[in-house]
Length: 328
Image (cartoon, rainbow, N blue to C red):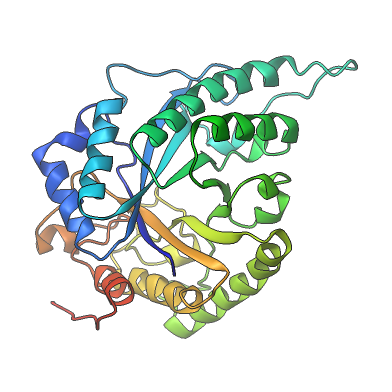
């Protein structure tokens, strides 16, 4: 397992990486044993059919904010994957960004406008990744509607490589890994591995392990075919009962707290994939810029955070090579 990683800072806005609370949160993350972080920073386009990506100078994280977080990680000997992301202001999932193909003479009017805007956006962050010494750069996240536009993507990859000279990854969505026709042009196969590995709420560790073994057996042939290692660019599960059945879920706040299910999700996945030589590693989702620091709050938190929960002990076991100690 090369990448013992975690995603940090998704949703972080202007100044949020540089607050005293963020510094505490960063240090708590670094203390888990991570050797990588994925710094996820997002801007928006208005709708799934907009052709312009807009930077909000009042709210979006600035280059100074991002550089600050990168420099703090590097000071601790932790590598960084910079992951610029695009969301839709109207709440549409970025996978739904989609336009009609070109007319009979091949003019992709909407696609050409969108890729021009996306390229300007991505090349800016590629330059920032190069200047700050980021050890990896992610080209996009879960943009399923765009992935078939192979010519545009290959051109963009070439332009990124002229600016950024480290390894490139792209983050597709689980179950779609074999449908990205230009994965051969980059260095890693990335995916959001929100695979449903439970059949019932409170699923057993044994059943989750069997489910992850099936995922492993699906992904390994693609890795071998392309000669690229797989990275789980996103993976996680809320500490809520039933969420291992739908690990991507963030909306069902009525689900009761269940840190055991979250811990079993972590442990089963780490046990299956950590020893596979074709598998590069994990960026778990997501460590907040402002994390709670008391057990009472942790005991009532049903989000993706693992701090002061059993899943954190599991992560430390695998990342630090120790034995989890239940401080409950």
